[in-house]
Length: 124
Length: 124
DNA sequence: CTTACATATTCGTTAACGCGAATATGTACT
DNA sequence: AGTACATATTCGCGTTAACGAATATGTAAG
Image (tube, rainbow over the protein chains, first blue to last red):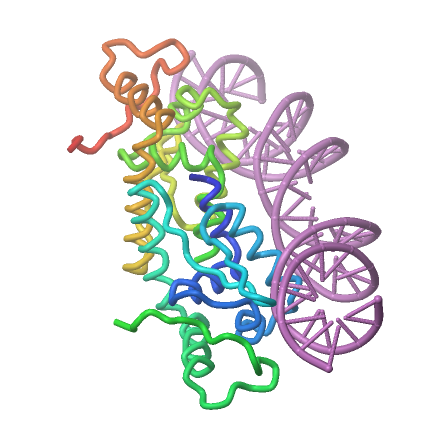
């Protein structure tokens, strides 16, 4: 349980989780949306992977990350309360807006040209 | 929000919160139940106080700590989910059992003689 | 096989954390 | 004032975490 909170005790990781909560997303979108250096993103994703919160899937050159709901029922309830609460934060909302925009744009910005679009769940 | 999780990312603090969730308790009970050195307990309580999760009340020589529910509705929901989940952990259950015992014992152990008994909420 | 690109990992440094030991503060009692 | 007790704080240390910079891995394409 502390391990869960260690994983959540970092703003970058919370922003990543907030995005991953929307569906399966590949790394290049994270770096574009968070505007953080790629090694930083990669390290935090590795951290989340080791803590069991997310899982990765390789697709050619791209790595897609998605949420892996915790095994225990209680931990799962905690996590979903966290994800819900995150959406109250202005920066998190901005991140989500950027993700929506990137997802639906007719042409992706040059930094993302060719990248597979994230598969977002339908928004409630 | 990260600050909340930094506070939760430590086993000692989780054990303290688990106990404080039962009602207002004074420091000597924490040291007796967790069997940890007094400065350690005191430091972690200070940490929780600074993070706004608990508040302290002086009563003569004794300091009583109690839960301070987070301001935001979402954060409050997260915390209560956490507290509920904590009770699944064997060590946390053991701590609660020791607390109950200390609270209802006819005579307190010598280490706690004279200490004000915690005011536990009724158990559901 | 070389290049290009997406992603991951390593290295070195700096900052924060948790702890034990020692000490300080605050309160009650005499 | 002086002692006893409950609690808080400080100090020094080893461990861990995050970061930028550099480099390595893996895959696709020519």
